[in-house]
Image (cartoon, rainbow over the protein chains, first blue to last red):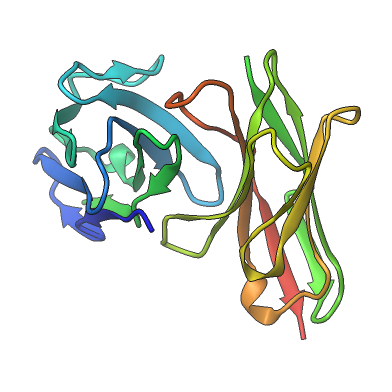
Length: 114
Length: 113
């Protein structure tokens, strides 16, 4: 079946640095990528939606200059957390949707900012 | 707009007992409904989905769900719980293809030996 590879699985970074998270669709073309954030024991909160080759659409309250999303190809999307701070520590999950209309989730990235 | 409500943030069942996780939806158009399972520090795995075909949907690991339009419900069931079923379960809805899924708050399932 469809697989989305998300890396890294976990990352620890110092406050003020930037972190890049990658999601690759391995066996299908991801026309749309969704990025979610999940706090402990909570549901997934949509951060942004990106279509290949277009600028991402961010949800209200999500800083687009802080959470940079790139979806330059049909198999790769990246989320860069710029100038990370402890409050950015969270679990980030991507979800890819292709022409079949299914949604395939990455395995998530645990970000800890110290 | 679409939304889902999951009744019960935590459900506890004995091993071998029936599992019932409740989900009610709200949608202005015919909905597509999903159930996902999440294990700690992992992504979401699709259990099953309703796409306007059969109202009784069978999924993986013995789970099934029934779409009831009159009740706006899509409850998830499994006849006999297994220890490995202990996880977080999310109900989700979407309207149009390639639009974001809208998730419920999740239900944590505990299975007692």
